[in-house]
Image 1 (spheres, rainbow, N blue to C red):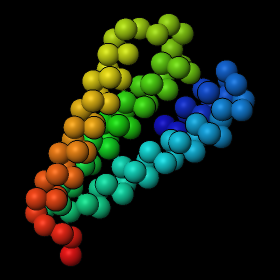
Image 2 (cartoon, rainbow, N blue to C red; image 1 turned 30 degrees about the vertical axis):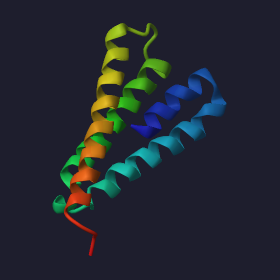
Image 3 (tube, rainbow, N blue to C red; image 1 turned 120 degrees about the vertical axis):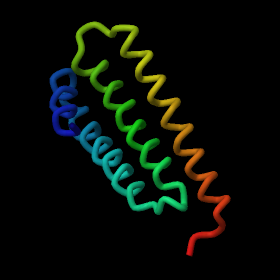
Amino acid sequence: LAPTMALAARRGDPRLAVPVATYGAVLATMVAASAAVPAERGGERIVTGTTLFLLSDTLLGAGKFVLRDRHPAVEAAVMATYTAAQWFIADGVARGARNGPAA
C-alpha cells in the first residue's frame, strides 16, 4: 500500500510523496524482519504486533490522505490497533527474553 498512500499524499502536497513511500517501505521491512524471529523468541507475538502497527499507520494515512471526513471510528481503530501492536511487540520481546539469550 505504500505506493498508493504516497500517491494519495502527493495529491495534497507533492513534497510528501517520497517521505510517505519511504515510511511505508520501512514499515513493510519491519513486518518482514519480525517474521524471521523464531517462535521460541516471541516471534509470533512480535509479528502480530508489527502487523498491527502497519495496519494502525495505514489507517492513520488513510484518514489523513484518502478520507474526506475523519470519522471517530477511524480514530478509534487507529488507537486500538496501535495499542494492541505495542502490547504484542512488548509481550513477544518479554517472552523471548524469558527463554534466555539468542544463540
